[in-house]
Image (tube, rainbow over all chains, first blue to last red; front, top):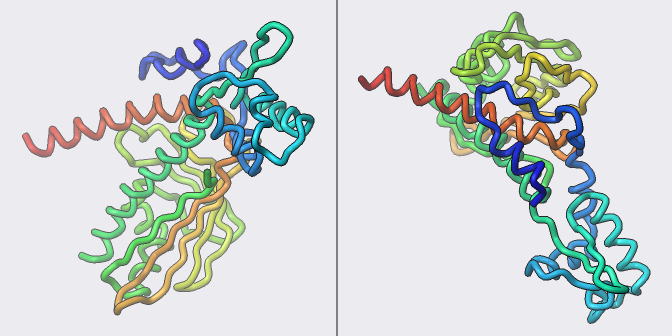
Length: 128
Length: 147
């Protein structure tokens, strides 16, 4: 979890703290959804879901996909900030950052809750 | 992960009643908690002040798409566009559809809202901040009501 996002999350209501202020990276959900909309990448995310950083070699194991393809998919995930890479000696290790996926889901959940509340009011209006 | 919300509800009321409740701008306003300035007209902007506790400062804006009598009502909007200091006009919108059908002597209402994948991520944090405010105001209302 990046410290930057933690700060945003804990912003005190009503203090006028603005999100997306100077220096805050403005991201879109689209790359997150797009990055997850692929079977191979979804498989990579599933493999990384145990929280352990993995090498490209490890992620290629047991798949019918080439090392090059896995590398390409990892870059897509990295660009969407779903996966982060660190260097360990000569090889790169890739780890999952669960935050973006959770954020995208939570927003939709909140909107969903809003509809539930509105529909209950609609129900009592038409059924009375 | 889906970028759509889908809600279904069976209402014990005739389809004509439900149609009126969702397409008459005054009736829509009572359950959606917005004070709309005028009737819904396809292709035109619908606007009004929110009446939802905690959101009274927000102007609700939508663009009406379709009005197929007793069948389909649709519009587009900026979900959670509640910060008066932010210009949302250049951001993508979600599409909301209300579909009606007769079922068991009542009405089945299916609502879908699609297009969340295009919404800026930093809106999420804002939504949560504002949501807390909204809930606090709701709780106060309940407290007033029961005391």
